[in-house]
Image 1 (cartoon, rainbow, N blue to C red):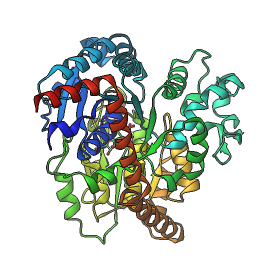
Image 2: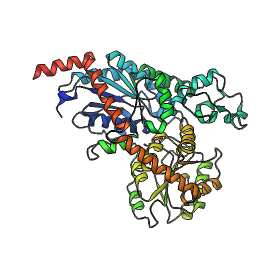
Image 3: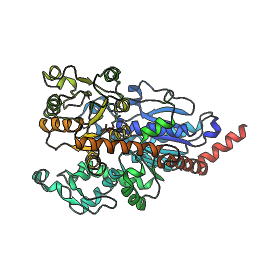
Image 4: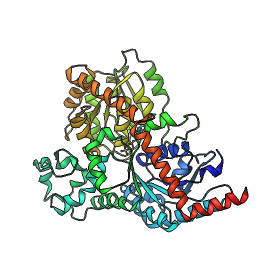
Length: 492
Ligand code: UDP
């Protein structure tokens, strides 16, 4: 495509962790497929770790320093340090990068800035460039609304909790029935951040502030589709007039982007052998349980043991991702209980990391034991795979609540993990009883609706086109784009 046609130039900057990088990269690919010039900005640290990903025509990778030192990177609170450091040090390098990009031969000036959640400081970069900004908030619509409402929950005295007993005395079951567009939910399901005793809780304030600051952007982009969350999206529209639901991003990518050229940015190496193991499973299709807790969750050795012995007791085949760092103390596979591998030999595969979308869409896989992260949930919905949900952080509780209650595709594990319940839920999901049949039927229906949303004429498909149109209009109105148009016209 001629550079002149790419006059809209989006600079994308995600918070530097997998759960933000993956969806932002998909959005970048989708924008590029629609003729938008794209610059995807990683941190220098991830850029090295990803072995300097190579771009292609109209799609470049750049990087900026995150300001962390070696000690910060291994500190238990490294994510907090990263957040603070980016906020303090990263605006100037991003601004400088955007300005330098605009001076390069054949590169249109940056005409909009697209960020993920948790990097709202970068909205000021767009302001300084006098170009519009968009936020791809990486949760469900309901997850976003719940995060916005943390402010009211705090102001109305629901949180912080009075003392430790409130975590277990039933207080978290308090019904919350006043959030527009949502059914009555438990206080504990609104967000993990309500579970604090600290009136100055850093995480609570950050989440609340980051979500509310999305109002400063021109538009909000969500990895969901209208049918899935119609009520809450309709209510959200009163507060956020420009919401673009363009998901599931994995489905949209699959439909609109050529996989041979698209970039992948996995922070861990994907184990190809697990795909061969799935290919070779002798059981009927849908017999394997896939188990993964995403890129950030940290289990205690005790929780790991409950999962492990529950899986062992279920006697069903399973593929389990045990990434380095999944277990406290930076441990991974080495923390699995002794004898566990021997006890599940012949029906288990343990991988450090895998190509999750492919795994979920593999015909051998019929269930997903998940932490209910939003990317994982949407990937499971798109694959039509029902879930066992073990939420533990942020929006995972409300995702689980919707998967089990609203969409009928999930079974929830109690907060206090017990191996007997893990085994019973695995049996219930994989065993083919009435409940499992209902969940499979619902999952197949949501899969079909996700497909329909992302095909031509579908809501997500149309919304992506609207977003691109918006970028072009906004782009052509911005001073940078006008300058670029003049320059390219002059050259012709
Ligand atoms: N993922 C992956 N391979 C794995 C485990 C996870 O590619 O072995 C990907 C998964 O497909 C998803 C992301 O990591 O896109 C996890 O995001 P999610 O929002 O589910 O959870 P988070 O990591 O943010 O807690």
